[in-house]
Length: 199
Image 1: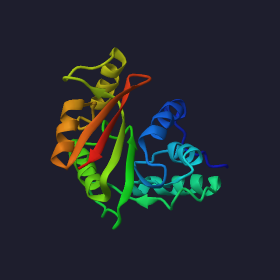
Image 2: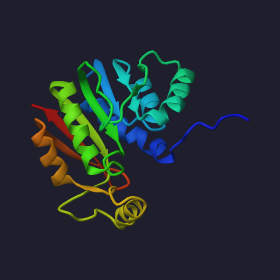
Image 3: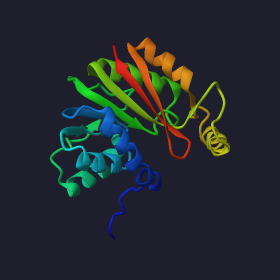
C-alpha cells in the first residue's frame, strides 16, 4: 500500500499570502530556521520561491521520517537536512541563522514551549535578524473572530495547555529575550504574522 504523505489544506491556502510577506521581510540571501515544519508544505513552497535562501526545516522526532521523504522527493538543494528539534528537550544547533520562521505553533505548544522557542530563536539568530511567527492571536485578551473563539475552545478541550495566545503576552515574552516586535501584519482567515527583530 502506498504511504500517504501528511497534507494540510490550511497550509496550501495560506502559503501564497505568507510568501508575499516573507519576500518583503526576509533577507535576500542567508539561512532561515523553520521551527515546527509540520507537513513540510511551507518549506517546499518557500524554498522554490525564495531562491536566495537556504531553508532549515526542523520538527519533533515523530515527524522526521515523513518530512525527510517529502524533501527527498522534492530534490531541492535549498532545503537543508531536517533537524530533530523539540524546543523544550532537544539541544539546539550550534550555529546561527539569518532569520527564523514558524507557523501555527504557538497555539498548539504549551506556554513553556513557546517560552523555549523564543529563547532558542533569540540565541540562534544574528543581531537585527527577524523572527516571523504566523498564526491566530488574540488582541487585548479578546478573540478577533467567532471562528477563533471556537477554535480555541476545541484546542483547550483537547489539551488545557493549548490555546490562542494574546499578542501582548507574546510581545512581552519577546522583549524578555532581546527581541522587539516590529510589525503585526493582519493576514487572511483571522491570522497574523508577528515580526520580531533581534536586538
